[in-house]
Image 1 (cartoon, rainbow, N blue to C red):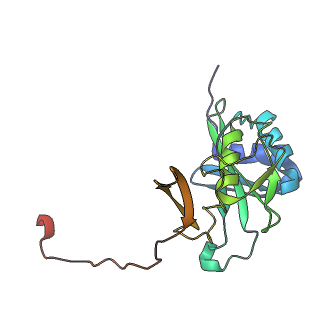
Image 2: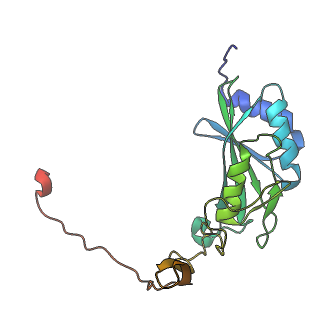
Length: 202
């Protein structure tokens, strides 16, 4: 197979042509194209990006959730949750970032792209587990990193750093037990010591 390398500008034009009015926003940053589509167009856009000439993003290399609730120090007013896919065209030696915002902050739902790229399977499970984003059409959407009895989604900005529960081994019961967190939340300000010529530095 011959490997070509096209410019980000050519990729942007090809993506715009393939997706047409499905494009909500498209831009180039750090030599990589980012395109945003509406949730209703997300699955079809994924198929077009995989199959269209000039796009040919045959591989999904990453998919992650994003929580924008504290973006711009809380001044952001758009939807809270997003899903971002990082796509690779091996044939054209190009990358693409595909972004979709979930419509509901209370129950974020987007389509699963596992039928387009089967590598999305565990990535979508991870985004569900850590952010609580639901993927419509995923046939095995369950937690992948946290315990089955875990409550909440630890990558959400409002999830406490200490969590809600802790577990320990109970020798009397001969099993692991859950209990409320015993760690006291406190803020620690590190003490900074500055010395002249520290480490031989001027």
